Picture (cartoon, rainbow, N blue to C red):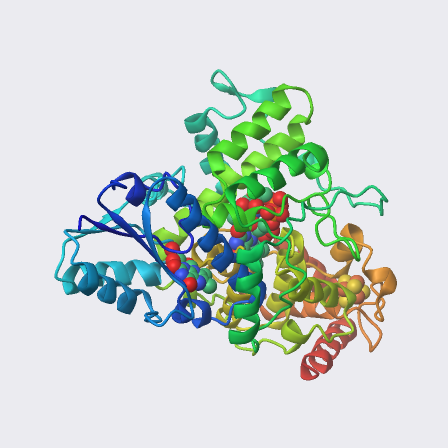
Length: 506
Ligand code: FAD
Ligand code: DLZ
Ligand code: SF4
């Protein structure tokens, strides 16, 4: 035969470099559902089902384009369980001239690919992943010599590079960033949009049965299952977002509401990250909606910033800092992850809401991840590595290249400020301002200490006190340290006591 093209589970894009390098008339594509990949962290059942179904549908899409696809289902007799064993098996079976693969999204698997180059008896080509707008070496060049790697400057370069929302050499509307107009709390609205719900088909039903049986003990509800698993359904879900939610995306980006997990968010990261949607293409659609007058500039700019700014930036940080970044622990936190991250059984209404919807949907929006579960973990001193494994396993969109910098860098400040300019630490007042959770909570968000006080409050001031040496020099934290210093000694003692009593219950 000709070449063997190994397509990994998050490479479901027909224009992928490895596929574009092949010839359907003589080459063969290999894809495999692998026990090792589904269990190296115990992924949410819905995440595994989503990916297996999307992989199976992609294999069909490729066959429709004339490719020969060897698709190894999880329960196939010749399933070897791991990337390395599956490839070794296929190489022995087909004796290809070359093996072609697009570089993997994770450092762990890139190491594997590189080891194959030495181990396997056939030449192995590793091609760049052209689905990203900034390649790791370009990011390293951008980062070289800079004292601080601020996303905002990276983002401006990406705007110039892509031409998105540019008015010749100037940013559209005269500003790069319209965040000052964003971040309003949302009100309950009967006409709140909902993400598109794709019906399951026979392929998805078969996968759901398989996952239900083989990964029964994994976290999360398998059903209802409504994620898109084909490119056309993912595109339809995105089109619905542009029409219904995007006009309010900027306004309510940071809002949280009981019973409304999705608000005006796109709920597309799972599609982008496995290759069903293309980042540049969707940004171009958003720009077109703005230019057609159906979306305001603050929403279009805010959305495009998340994709060509944050998404590319965290990937750049990941490849710049791996290996080793995953073990960052600036504050030296060691507390085990509390059980309620799995059960949702806590009296804190905000944490309960975030964990419960995570169990149901394998989704929580950015502010829930950052300011509820992430913030709580940092204030409580949870080991960032354990928290990283939690985020990696519970969200359908979670792959290490994007999850790790968001967890370790943005939410835990465990890299000491490489990614974030200050720790995202907040007391209950922030959650109260941005949500309606506190109204139904057993705790009183207005009290700082005592058994009825919102735990975020004492934990927040206790965090400031415990880490004052590490944060007092940060211009954006110095004011909080000064405020703490002005508290009377007995109030400082009450804060420490309240925080410790609460922490002992974890
Ligand atoms: P929207 O709010 O509608 O935003 C649109 C798109 O922008 C997203 O789909 C996503 O592709 C991109 N985006 C927005 N913020 C970020 C960001 N900070 N980093 C990268 N892309 C971003 N995102 C993941 O894709 N995978 C993860 O594993 C992941 N883990 C996270 C862990 C923590 C602790 C935090 C704080 C954030 C994490 N994020 C992760 C970023 C963000 O929360 C999700 O991208 C977003 O919630 C996905 O929902 P959405 O599609 O509705 O996004
Ligand atoms: C996340 C995941 C899961 C759950 N299962 C598979 C799988 O069965 N086969 C596969 O090829 N990839 C899977 N993945 C994605 C990988 O763990 C990994 O994130 C990507 O291959 C990195 O490029
Ligand atoms: Fe969360 Fe505190 Fe509000 Fe309760 S009172 S919902 S714990 S912020």
